[in-house]
Length: 151
Image 1 (cartoon, helix red, strand yellow):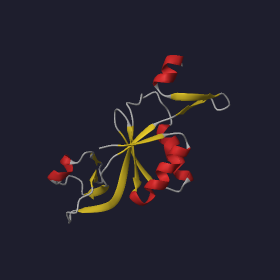
Image 2 (spheres, helix red, strand yellow):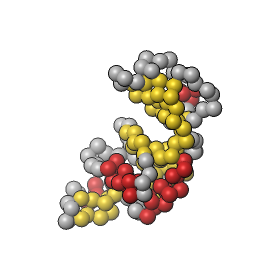
Image 3 (cartoon, helix red, strand yellow):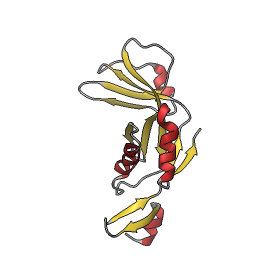
């Protein structure tokens, strides 16, 4: 890897013994609380889902999962898991970078914090429960990562 790419990707240290790079990342904490909604496959989604600052929709052969801003609206057609916060990894991240999710999840694993990871074309998003937010942010800072507050 050239020195120029080394700096572009924020790589700060090369470890010869493990043949790997250490990456310092910037995490942007999104301002809202989020929920994970499980709808039956093919369900019509509520309009408010699409007005969320961040939303993700995944349909499989078994279910339709939606991550969107937490709503106080009672839904009879969904199972809901509330009180998630989202950390966006500042990107874009190059597809050649290996182990970003593994490294980040390892930090949270050490602190016994459950996560949900979402990847997009440009970057990754890490969801952690509101109750674990302070401990999770401290764990990231301890490992040299930066935290900023989003809109």
